[in-house]
Length: 379
Image 1 (spheres, rainbow, N blue to C red):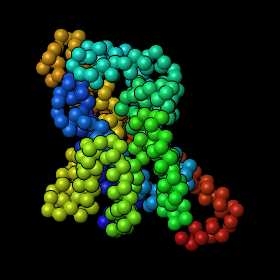
Image 2: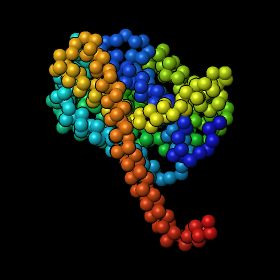
Image 3: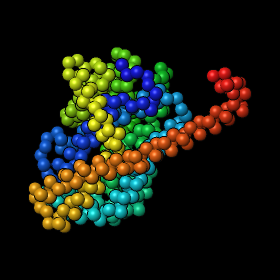
Image 4: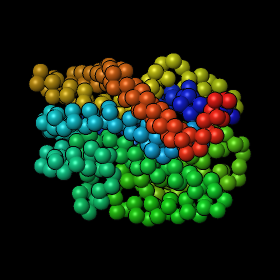
């Protein structure tokens, strides 16, 4: 079982899983750029689905273990997500011209590049409008009828960050209802309502992936509370819905998640120990720590290197080799700088502000009830 550790403590095997999934995303985007047929590696959205399952687990754990008001919780989440995201967003907006040149140069190699080119052109035409929705991470809330694929302009991979932010906002209420014997029906109604209206939006809308979050959250209770027919039934029902709605390849994402999770918590026989050792290795844990940075910025060295190598006259295999090397090295080099220079500082700042808010809240409570102060002194 996963011990009831402090909410901020990271589970080594799951941190390594993050690092592995970030590598999958990079490989998938490179394959899409050059039209390589790499089977499952080219289906990098499955890696994003694993990230979403993992997020459902981690946020449920955070809310279950760490008792804090909604304002403090969402402030911490905001300082975790927004500092690096906003920098990557504005940098990507400044580089729209570079993106356009890159995708135009390799448009003949893959339909993905044609789609990317159209998105960049759309972003350039309506940049203020797109920034208006992207800055607050609301791009996933734009109906398809108003602006098709609005979530993928400027910083395309941030569609899933918008999705995550939507989940952060509703997760406390959803969990509170789901774990209440009297209000569980309300949680079920919210999930069904999100599913019902999701066709009006794109895949960056919470309803499109709510079942993945449900599976991740139910997985947490399954491994921490022991076998439960309720948790197992919920997982099976949600997994069936995911496969029915999104296709058979979802079995891969679900399989990766449950194999990694059961190996991490020591419940996968024979091969489980080996998998847990790999996922908990220093290298994968390091890659996991920087996975958010890698995910947000890896497209910048990818399309920038296409432009540079094209201008230098590289073509064919030399172009692809140069772009692959630059993308991998550049992504991880930049991510180390952004992780230590931006991410960790944002997290630390959020923790300090949250701590002060908690102290002010406690002081205010002590003024209204002096006995609280006496209890605090005794402790």
